[in-house]
Image (cartoon, rainbow over all chains, first blue to last red; front, side):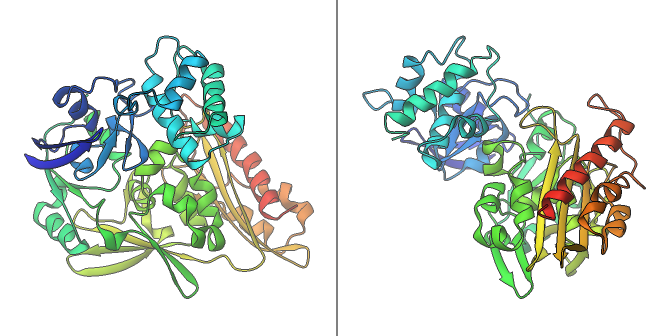
Length: 155
Length: 283
């Protein structure tokens, strides 16, 4: 067992974990952060995307021990009283159908907008490579990112 | 899917990593960013007793100049490579190819050295390292040794790195004045592996091609140099690029799989080589 210390959505946690424990299972099973779903299980789909020290990562492909000492933000940590602007944008643009990919799409969109506050449609589509929507609802997801950018971006 | 149990060792220096590997030998596996290894662990295609995590070894990260070379730490992430000024200025082919690796989230974790040491023939960076005549600096109990790229990639997922060794850094000759480059990749969907990829660097002089280096991705169990193309381009006029590119599949042994048969890959290699060399020659 390995002792780790991780800050998740602003709250500090200390735990003993097995080396093989995946970050997504730590978040869901230990901390109850079930807002981050497991999708493809093969690091293709991006539904488990969270931010680790300010960068998007696929939490099914990170070991909890690798996240030791880091700050994790999940979709559950975005709203501070009010929704995060990207969450609002997804609602306004109807950028979700079944909703399974949505947490990952939102986390990847925030990452994209922080790096590029006013992306072109092409840059949005490239920036969201690695996040798949099985409902194929990409048109409105792209519109939501454009909407969020127009409203002031990821902040 | 959950990986099989393993003991986790976090190395904080190259010496610590080498000591752990010397102790556990081929029961141990080195982990960099884990973007290839963790999926393999989860599919239980790999089940080491010990995982030695070198992801935080500071002396293995970052990029520096050393005369006519850039020295790229093995733990430099793809994201850092893409945004690194030295790499963009002196070895832009690496940055360009790295932009096509996987997707942004994977590029935040995956590393330059990890991709080379994993040596997937469909990975983009091995062919680039080969085309640029990079040298791999490998540390083991007996000290450090330097292996040229052409002797580094031995077979499918196999390199010259021994079980008790770790790839520390990569020395890449700077591309000087007059060099152009291009990485052409053909893949099925955005973040998928290359069906075929071509890395080309071309030096022009007085309107002709003075020197060309071409590396092929996924045209065999290792990356390969298209030496027939390089030979044909040596001193050639720009009009001869198409003819030279027709030799791209010479000496290759392309795989056949669900993405395409060998003859289809050979066709792709010729077409992508023509495009890559044409772009690299700036014509």
